[in-house]
Image 1 (cartoon, one colour):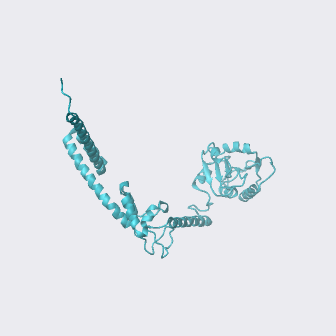
Image 2: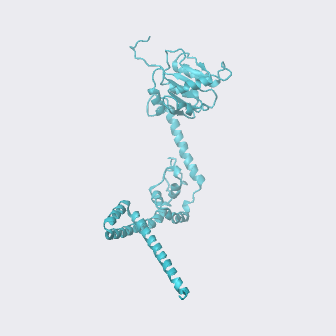
Image 3: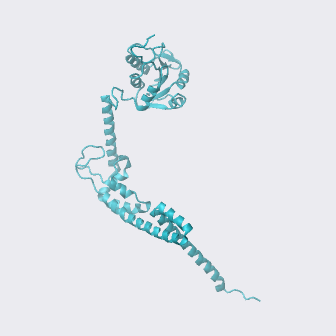
Length: 338
């Protein structure tokens, strides 16, 4: 008869298994730490050591440990540099510096650089702020505590938003002044004509049609079926103003009777809305003669627009501000006229 196993005899294998499991976990954690620090030292060096370890395990293991030591030193240097850079960043701007709007700073205009770094929309992050923010997420709490301890860093969000709004208003005023001067890089061009529209107008040939539509027109879906295949924009501009800009460089066709057409009012074909009367005046002024609009039914207008060369969408909010224009030709002085 075998004697029953004592509790001590039963616990010994269990303790050995637990000890082995703890040892395996520790080895895995140490291996992961070595691999992580080695990768932190450099990916290329890590790949080289890994290939070396495949051929020479002893040299590869020693090299991996040394590489992990280098990565650990780099990590420690980064951990000590992060709060120092953040503390250096919490320095208010001195008098006479330029705020975000580009104007001369008032005596009370003091925005700490660390606040600039948090406000990305102002586009004025300094090198100190970049160096303070480029470290890993594990240093964020320490860096945040340093920023909170800096009394000058406590700038209200409304103050930062007002500065950014001031800069935006300054940029808008500059663009308006350029538009009033009439010179936008190229001379004698309407300031509304952007590069995409100029390219489309130059690419069009004799007989090609161009659509200028209001904000309610299904411009995107129609423009995808045109020759150009994409929608052109003149946002925030009325249809008559867009017609003036386009016809300042594009001649209307003189070989057909009606080179300009308008969308007909549904149920009232003889009614001419105010937006179409203003557009008629722009067309007559551009051509120097009377060029009456042809009236096109709404759904027929849609079909015609799909076959046009391109579509220009405006910000016109009034209904029926949609027009089609046929491009003409500019003949040389000695060219036959008939």
